[in-house]
Image 1: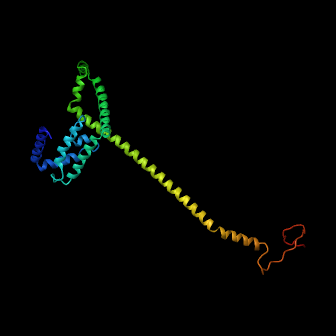
Image 2: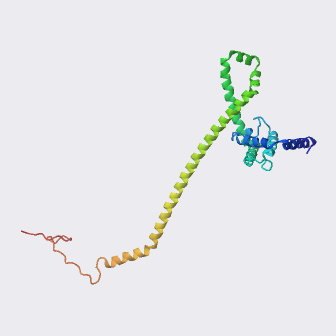
Image 3: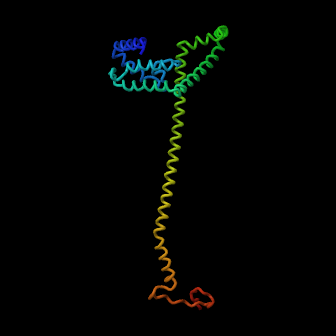
Amino acid sequence: MGSSEADEDQLLKSFLAEVSETERDNEVLRILGCFKLNPFEHLKLSFDSAPDEVKKQYRKLSLLVHPDKCKHPQAQEAFAALAKAQQLLLDPQERGYILDQVTAAKEELRAKRKKELKKDSASKIKSLVDEGKYEEQFERSDEFQQQLIIKVREILTEKEWRRRKMQMRISEEEGRLKKDEEETKEMWKRKREHEEKWEETRDQRVSSWRDFMKTGKKGRKGEIKPPKLKTEDPNKSYVQRPVKRN
């Protein structure tokens, strides 16, 4: 650790020693009140903050609300929120996604301002004369930065809502496919059980058929058969009822 880093570390420790319990509690409440989808807000950083700034700010705020130093009942929750914010901003993919939404928000605000300038001739002329410096100054203003934060919230909220709806549809489809799979398995199970039972009774069925072939036509031994009725037509092989004659 260099001398400058050591001095900075000592300065931070002195600062934290002077922080009152009320200030720690207020910081916990601020963190928990932040817009959950924007990690820059949790760490109180601007959208153009570098990764090194993210690490430095996380260390400062995490020591401020650390459960071992802060007595607030939700200190652990605030501490975890800061850790997640740092993780997101140090992950290139997650950071890139958020910054893409920041870019989209800026474009929307610029388009809106362009329309407003068309109605304001004085501002339009000033913008043209300054060759873009007028707009650069405006985008550095607190007014624009506040508009940007709000617009980023709107875009992130809309994106998250779409993601959750898509996830819900995917879950529903997965549930339907799982149900169909279970029903198919049950159908094949019943079919196998039926085939197994059919195979188990095969010998019995064969034996019953053989017995029928032996005794079915001749009748059982000792069985009394009813007398055959005479037919009117001796050429007919089936039995007819006798015809009554008047």
